[in-house]
Amino acid sequence: MPVTWLASTLGLSYAARDPHHTLGRELSLQSNYLLINFDPVAVAIGPLEIHWYGVMYLLAFLAFWGIGNRRASRQTWWAWSQQDVSDILFYGMLGVVFGGRIGYMLFYGFELLIQDPLSLFKIWDGGMSFHGGLLGVIVAMAWFGRRTNRSFWQVADFVAPMVPLGLAFGRLGNFIGGELWGRLTDVPWAMIFAKSTAFRPAETAALNDAWRSGALDHLARHPSQLYQAGMEGLALFLILMWYSKRPRPRAAVSGLFLLGYGVFRLIVEFFRQPDEHLGFLAMQWLTMGMLLSLPMILAGIIIILFAYHNDPAPAKVNT
Figure 1: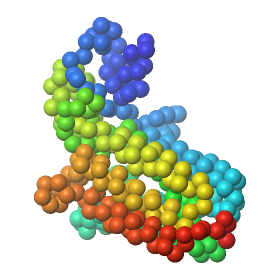
Figure 2: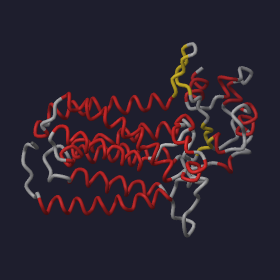
Figure 3: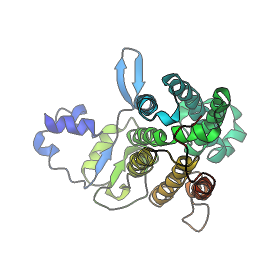
């Protein structure tokens, strides 16, 4: 039935898992909010399980490869080949994974890292930091630029517009995984995340009953993952793609990326729940995400001003 399919697709798993519910009961839910409880496995073929996180990473890398090749062929002033796009994608993937994990452990899990240094390699336990991933990608771009006799900014300006779309897929992965949720709220579009409740994964039936009764409505939260996917993901992608459609002063595109991401992330941090083991750093509103985004905003402004001051009339070809 359409309602059953929609409920299952949205993670409202009660309809698919309990055949005794009737359509009338499905449509008479007392809760005011959606319950987000996706199956983390997107596809299972025998013993092989493909998780949604893996799907999102794959879509992000495919999007980068496709858009990068399109820009390389149509915006010839970049002087990039398809092989260049494939190479920077490979190095960038390494930077994202290693930088993201190391950054998470340093910024958000330092105590655990001290207690158990091997936790750095336990990627399956979760934990990736955008700011750490960014540092990893910066290292990858510098290495690639050195190998291809390009300046760092020539590489960064080409790469920057394609990064936000990958971030959007990553935030959708966070949403499907029911993690990094927002703060408590009663806005009409608020959602209840199963992992934010006291129910364990094996208690699906009890969770669904409590949700239907409205007993979990006080746990409704901002879907901040979707805010991030829309702002630092899709919106920033469109802004940068428009801005980079014609030659700009060297480093200006990269500066706009830093500025745009920092501003959007700073805004979302007012709706996102701080990491439990960190909480608010000061004054009951300052979070680690804000603290890490403020330098990005400052750096973005400085780089843009520097770019237009030193290269007000950019050349048509970057060589």
